[in-house]
Image (cartoon, rainbow, N blue to C red; front, top):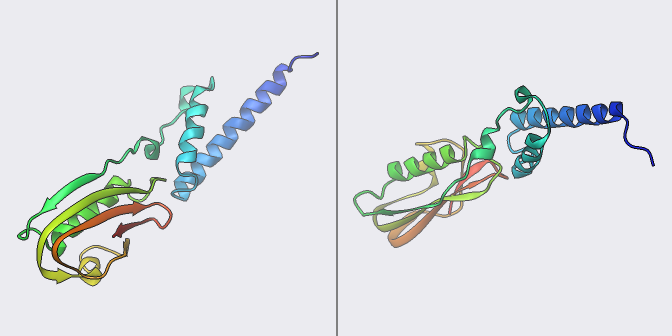
Length: 157
């Protein structure tokens, strides 16, 4: 039984490095190209005996969002405050570059004196929102703010 020739090992290593670099480039051009699969592959790539300049960092692999619970009293329950949490959720997602779908905030609202809807929020924010509920109004309700990596939008549920 023959062993692998040194040139074969070199060619395979070069091919793997080329594939890894191409995947990194595609993921930077097209956010969520590989999602968390890229991070798993990247961790394997880091174990290869390659020069340090080929082992650059991937920002999206270091994102590990944590869901936060927030209580809003009737004085603070308004579109501007909700918009702040939507914006913070977008920041938690790395500006839409993470490959994860996760809940950012679970907001408990005591009482909403003046109802508001998607138009009130999008006029303050942008079209990066996927509004899944009607008007926000009434007493004792919960609003979930979630980042969806598939649609690359913040969802309000």
